[in-house]
Image 1: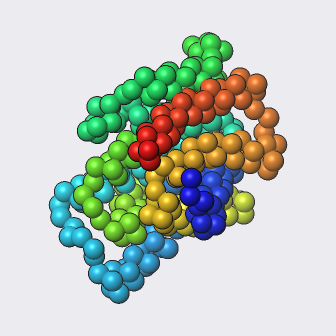
Image 2: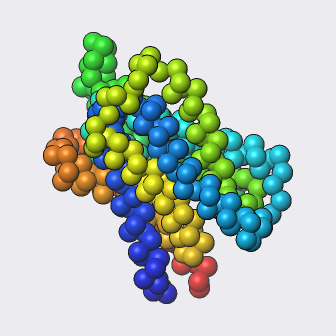
Length: 308
């Protein structure tokens, strides 16, 4: 196996920290601010950074591909399913559950992508490895939610709905991943800026419709700092790092994020917020990561055969 350059490993570690810390930062932000305001602020900060960079690149290098109506439709759908909707669902859910638990629930995203790809992406049919991985990951979700959560939901309390909201965010990310794969070719930075800008526009009516006439009045220094960090680091900088890593190392190397991000999210919640996940949550994490590993084993076998 060819050793990876230090830059690839640095970007992989950077993305792990940036995306894994998003759950911690979101938890801090929604403790004082409305979830829709947190999402809108996050997207606005990212826009202020990404749009000028994209305009500069476009002015100096031009567009590598033509931007037709079909591409704009895909970018709009990615703005919905990759930004506005999942950010909102996860932020709402994290009002009621720990950041570590949200990180574990999000680990199901690559397995959800597999299931959807079977129907939507040519050549991505389910195989025995993928089915086994999906079932193992689904078992982890069942263990995580458990009969207690169902019983609490029946009594009108508990964390079932917040957990379902975060799972909904994971499903949105899976849809976005498929849309990104099927979209017409386009330069990465302008595409990221365009989707972020459209997602910000989608969030504007929700923010203007908030019942509190002056929602920022309840903001704390920590919550404002968390929103700024979410926009600058977990959204804008992470997008740039992601596209750089995809280009230099390829999707197989980047897929290691599926293991690292949930682990970092759990560690960050325990270290900085004093969270203590229940044993069932850790068991579920092992099952979900085991499911991802099964799928990865098949990919490694295919790569090995190709080298022979």
